[in-house]
Amino acid sequence: MTYERHARTLSALFVLLWIALAVRPVSRMDWLLENVLLLVVVPVLFAAHRRRLFSRLSHSLIFVFMCLHEIGAHYTYSQVPYDDWWRHLTGHTLNDVFGWQRNHFDRVVHFLYGLLVAYPIREVFLRIVRARGFWGYFLPLDLTMSTSLIYELIEWLAASVLGGDLGQAYLGTQGDMWDAHKDMALASLGALLAMLVTAAVNWRCQRDFALEWSASWRIRGRNRDFVAKMPGPGSKSRGHSR
Image 1: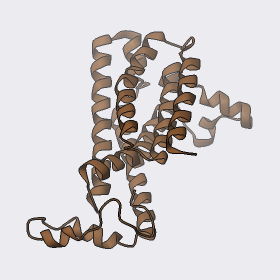
Image 2 (image 1 turned 180 degrees about the horizontal axis):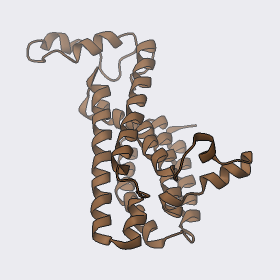
Image 3 (image 1 turned 90 degrees about the vertical axis):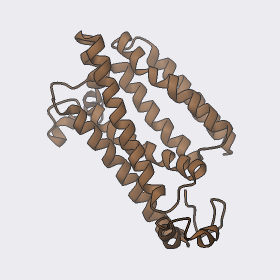
Image 4 (image 1 turned 60 degrees about the horizontal axis):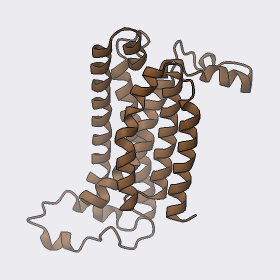
């Protein structure tokens, strides 16, 4: 499937899912608040698509995360009936399997935010900032953690302003005073795993992996000739650096 066709297919599937989940959500106001994210993401993705910033893999990862977010927006994150779905499939609840006492859909999505979005963020750093070596893995992890923190602050601020049931539905703490901390920790863990897997694949497939990693620690002013010889983003190797 070509790049253009892949992007259009994912876009069409997401629009269909969005329309279906926009019908009679559990809380219309909470659904509207959650979908504010689309006002930021959609223009960014459109601009990125025009410049071919993201690979097809990144488009797919973002698509999966946005679909999960829309499911959370439809039901509210604290009321997604994943336990009922699992019971219909297996005859017992997922909470019983893991010994959970609360609805953990929000925790799973925060973990998947780090796991799914860190790689697309890495492509931004590789292709725009031209980060290499260590920084091509650390900076995506750092930005994923930072955006997770910013999102939790936005949630807290919105819940404080809105108050009442709507504020609680949007915040979704379910009585856990450490909810925001756990969400940020899970997002960080997901991003760390994504970068470790990416590094492991590149270490196995990229011929100049060690050289690139070493060069990323050198001071450019003192090693200008050495850095100039470093392969760029379009250089050939046994695998892809992205």
